[in-house]
Image: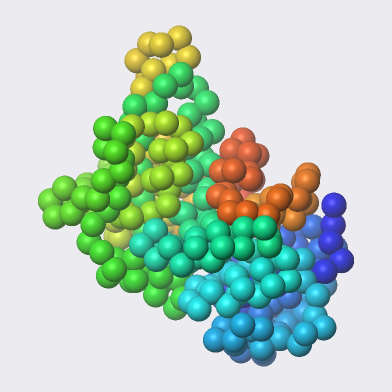
Length: 336
């Protein structure tokens, strides 16, 4: 099902927003898109390259975003931090689906409260996970071979040359500055860890060990609740990626370790690396595009009003299929 009204992409001329718009245009050539940003010329360049798109300026300090009242939209995508939640209010006032990716676990409470207070107004997709939910979806696809999962451990490597644009860099710095503690699930209990307990070693795809730390990310509760695993941890390191050590471009790497039992009850574990040679941007854009598809029902039925997470809307197998299509790989870590 296609929509006549336009998908409004806040921050649509930034790296994540422009890349998301490109994915949506490739998948749904007739879907109208509105590229919204502070610099109209830049937004117009992105819109012109896409075709079938318009460009507007927005003011995130205003409840109406500074947009004309007669413009119609089908959804609002916050590809930049919606710091005053005016993008969410704009969507709720008009009964439009809303998606955001930049409110981390430590600052998500206002967004959850705003969505909960008007739960019947419109669907709200909270996708401030790694790659807008793709790591969670990749883990859930791998988890289908397990009868029971005891431990999930994720190790993310972000190349320092792959921090993204200014907005993405600000999000990372805010995440690291707000708290030095990480949220883990330990023996079935969600627990904050700090100091030495928060420190970690993240193993890159070529075996190089990078110093990292546990971080507070939505991936932890999403994975813990979706799988029932009593032990879940997400560690993060910034450093040179394996691809760049080989003389190539900055890549993005996620190590996934799962331990538990197989479908027969026998002990079972697996380790995989999710890697994209072009860095985090293609995967984040893919996660956003999958979220838009789910919210609007572009591959099925549109979702009901209320608060949603990526794993509630997107089939893991379909997400992994799309990841592989855009050049991501899932490789066996224990065989390397």
